[in-house]
Image 1 (cartoon, rainbow, N blue to C red):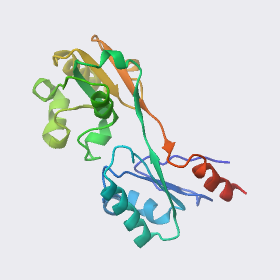
Image 2: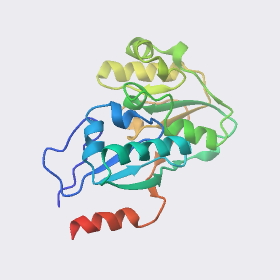
Image 3: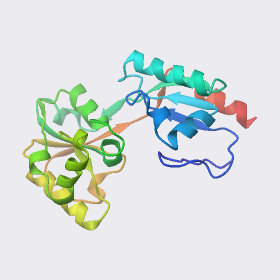
Image 4: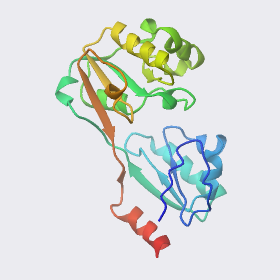
Length: 219
């Protein structure tokens, strides 16, 4: 068995026996307007609508309607994506700087991610805007992607950019740095302030259903 994860920028290079496409109801319509995501949406055997715990019902329904229109043979499943914090006691009542996955806030077009969701659920007093304290390429990122303002995108495509991200974190006045990136940022940069990390998992609304659908293809 070969399990291939195409991320957000690829089509499979081999014809898969089972093609799963994850759709994001926090960005309804993107599944029809962005390539190659749109092509994956049309080709998929299973369309998994994630983040149902933080999305509006009408946005979930719009993705289901688009699936019925362009890929009526696909099996449509729903799932939650609960965000958990490793140190929730540090968040409550604090001024929090949230760092989110870079591509989510830049060309992904989002204004928040799992970090903001966790900050609000754990009672943060304030989400601190790092925009006035951004330096170098981080400042340029806000100019190019104004939707990212208010949250800090984890931009680290070079040693210089990592240093500028580190400097922006240091200059932003906050009680806690809440990291919502897929990787542990402390492995690539130094965060001198108190920090906590947010993780998120897949939680199918009907337990076992995704596994059951995959097993049909495996058989």
